[in-house]
Image (tube, rainbow, N blue to C red; front, side, top):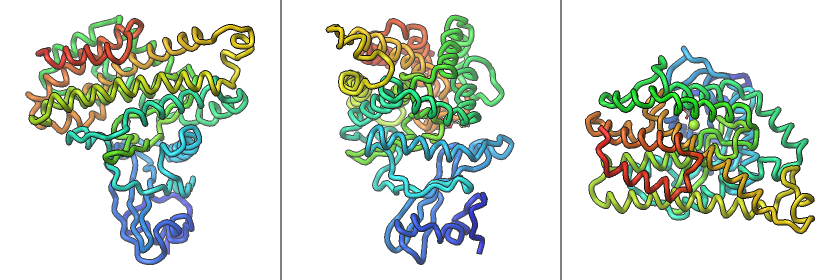
Length: 417
Ligand code: SR1
Ligand code: MG
């Protein structure tokens, strides 16, 4: 038997013998005959469904390299540790929003967690044209609660600073974001790829010094601003949904960062779903695209409503204390407005950058990649790239999600290339 807690990448064949004594896993699936399936379709990890006489569980294990690229790109196993700690904080800050964690094994870099069923990856639903009831409200609340409750608007300063120190050890994973998301789209980086036909649009983006400065300013805030604990990779592949229930998964890119980071990345992925739709469906194209834009608007409205609610009910941290405002008979609403103004500036900038990186850098998204004909894909990606550039350039003055969606509608009706 290969029992032990040292690291060894699991396989469907070795998993039962290696994990049969993990009581938390046995409690979920039962002892005895296990069926094991590897279902990981992400860029980094192994994901197993373990089925036994009593039920099913997920075993997620980090690999010591980037799965998408291979062992030429090593990646530390410690990311499982940060993912585990991120999940526990998200569960506390927005109960029910993430899978239940049954077990964590630091040495084996694995997490045993709830098997979500019949949930599927949201990106797949968006490509298939399926609607998810309650999605926008869930995501808006999740982003607002995790942003507010992970910041010094709410947390006790010593706790928040200890958490910043803890997550500061997650170095190589955020480094992926720093390069792939913020920088590589804007020059011919080695691992980049793009759809043929986009060259004129790419030349405009890479020739725009002001735009590159704004992208780098966003990177500067991303690496130096520890406002809150961010999920760090909140795209539609990090959300699992049924027709009316959703959960957020996969926070291994966790770090302390800007308040607007997660919601900006999330909106970008809905916008890319929107722009890709003409290649995925004929029937109900307009209706489904309208639904996606409606989700973006509701996510942002819910976020603001929840953030303002938390501001008035849970502002217990050192920032903007009641002693300075309410206790003086003064309203703190202007302070909340100011915080939200900076937050949305960051969010729309990140949104535009994420829209660029998924078409220009490494790790494209299936919304576009599943379009087999480059002649169909390129014009849709071009619209997406153009809106992304507008968002980066205009992030300071954008009035809200309605304006963003109106701009998206205009590009959707324009032949950019
Ligand atoms: C090398 S990892 C590429 C991408 O996959 C992850 O899901 C993140 O989005 C990362 O940027
Ligand atoms: Mg992921």
